[in-house]
Amino acid sequence: MTVERAALATTRPLTPRLMAPLAGLALALLMAGCGSSKPKPAPLEDLKPTARLSTVWSQRVGSVDGMVSLAVAKGTVTTAASDGDIVQFDLATGRTNWRASARDGLTAAVGSDGRFAAVVTDKNELLTFDQGKLLWRERLGGRVITPPLVAGERVFVQAIDRSVRGYDAQDGRWLWQYQRPGGEPLALATVGALSAFRDTLLVGQGARLVGLDPLKGAVRFDVNIGTPRGTNEVERLADLVGPIARADDEACVRAFQLSVACLELNRGSLRWSRPQAGTQGVAASERVVAGADGADRLTAWSAANGDLLWRVDRFTNRGLSTPAILGDRLAVADRDGYLHLLALSDGRTLARLELDSALVGAPVVTGDMLLVVTRKGTVYALRAN
Image 1 (spheres, rainbow, N blue to C red):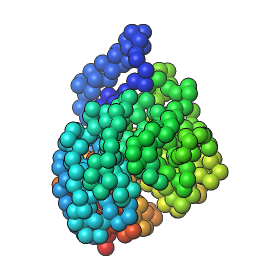
Image 2: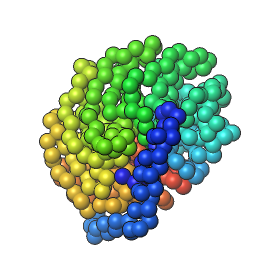
Image 3: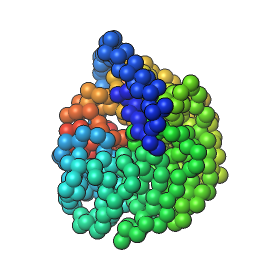
Image 4: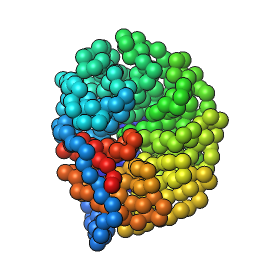
């Protein structure tokens, strides 16, 4: 783990006693990084494509400095640029439905149910729009990186301190707040686990996945993904990394530097867990779960029992993204902006497409299309042929 790949945020003020060892650890890591060269990325393999990735449409939004999500709902896709521009496109054609501006930079974007769209600005304000028209804004108490979730005419926000708040989407009325007691004092400054399953809100709380009543914030289930081990608070970090991968009644998720696990959501129970130290989310279907470890070795497990299906190491140190499953194929991008299409059955590379830059959020699959957004602010709607 390096300081660059695991930015930390405190969930309570640091005392001098705690700051000293953390500062020493950060300095040691930084000096180690300066004194040695980065691992050399694996070269691109020679490839004779047996499939093709074609662009259905593409649109420019604006440059993106951090992480931005794509919210797909009701035949639309909504996204945003770091400078505060928010755009909704027609999913089938790429035609612009509406544009809006937050008038400030964004730290968390974007959540949408197709009608309402919510973002969080760098001034810690939650803004909610109705078809591009600003409805309300609310000052938040802490920094937010995870995109808001909009569902059931509610807006849900998860801060870096792991607290979760629910609001009425129509008028911004605060409904409830939840934060699991006894959490770790440090948290990852990365997109966390925040999703919905039927009438249950799914939230990450450290290495636990908690199911909440979205109307009251009451706990319905609380599942431990794994117990982190380490000699200090940094080594014990195991926050769930978003987005949560859904497959029918199951959810699969990564616990940072700990494991990949799948849960049965109807019972709120852990189905299986496999150790893998990684920093990106995973992809899941009814048959296969896939994800890359910290060295970018890509692994596929059986969704039924977690048995190993295959592992490939030809992408090592290429900076792989969260993958996505598109039918019987697996799509994953690297930091150089190449999108790789693999056979889900055995990990063979079928096709490769060069995008204009690296991805800044997890790919999204809807129907037979793959949606991605790049650092240069281009939204691609792709189809595998």
